[in-house]
Image (cartoon, rainbow, N blue to C red):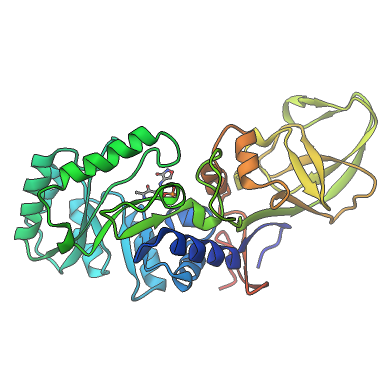
Amino acid sequence: MFYRDTWAEIDLDRIYHNVSMIKAHAGFESLFAVVKANAYGHGDVEVARTALEAGATHLAVALLDEALKLRRHFSDSAILVMGPIRVADIAVAATHRIAIIAHDLDWIEAAAGYSGPRLDIHIKLDTGMNRVGIKCAEQLKRGTRLLHNNPAFNLCGLFTHFATADGDTALYQAQLARFDRLTADIDLSALTLVHQANSAAMLHQSKQPQSNAGRLGIAMYGLPPSADLKLPFELQQAFSLHSCITQIKQLHKGEMVGYGATYEADTDQLIGILPLGYADGWLRYHQGREVEIRGQRYPLVGRICMDQCVVRIDPSIEVGTQVTLLGDLISVTDAANDLNTINYELVCSISDRVPRRYKRHGRFISERNDRFSDA
Ligand code: PMH
């Protein structure tokens, strides 16, 4: 239930389409559905369920907190936390059968004495992104030995992450080569999961010869990882954002709109008030952008407030008329390009104050309002 006419729609049929198409295209036996950050703002549980139906074999998140939440809903699915966790929390992960990563030799040395329930662990290699991971072959060798020596750890995976699978192919190739150099002395066939590819690599590169799995994030949501590259097939954007006009008023030439009076009417004109603002993640940088009403584009005028924003309209529009802020006409990716940011950031920014409504098999099946629930 929600009591304000602002909501996001998530078309799970489109997520199903994207996952099954990408799985077939990439050709990996195993596929992680990356559902961190509340599935990039789409809703972790709902997206995870659909992705698993469509052929994903594992779930991946960034935080142990996110994994523990998923575990409540998916008692048997394999879940990986891709970010470092505290050594002190290994037992929590193990108790809930959540796989974790070993990202650093100091961390492995501190964890070496762990003696709780057995758990799966993946070594994270840094092959050139210079973010999380082990960079040096000596440290990898010693870390691997320490993990092997402790029967509480099931060393089942090895992975890295690409910085430029959608662009700088020289760095992409260098990362592949570094992965091969670092793992030259490791029997990769003894590991269940070797994974390197993100969406960009799965869509735009040939299969990495060492890998048997990929980690699929942004493209699962139907959003292209790269603004510049041609997609091998159509992705379907699952996310759309809607609101309805709550009030209409006449502005006379010279009147101003909103905080700071940044917009001045240059003629007599009509404006409509929309009940969403920066507290919903509809951030101030959307000022001046266009929204869709009945297939036409209309400009937002004045500053975006915490709970409201204002759209310039025409007389055909009434109180209650639906407005689509992001959808098929004004796509997440076009809006992101317009704002000099990336589609990832836009969807992640829409806050949990905006209820999510879920569509599957062409009809609405559920909704989620994290700020308020009848339950
Ligand atoms: N694997 C890791 C380790 C990641 O951090 C991410 C995304 C993915 C896979 C999925 O990538 P994709 O969404 O491009 O398919 N991580 C981030 C990030 O930290 N900032 O933006 C995307």
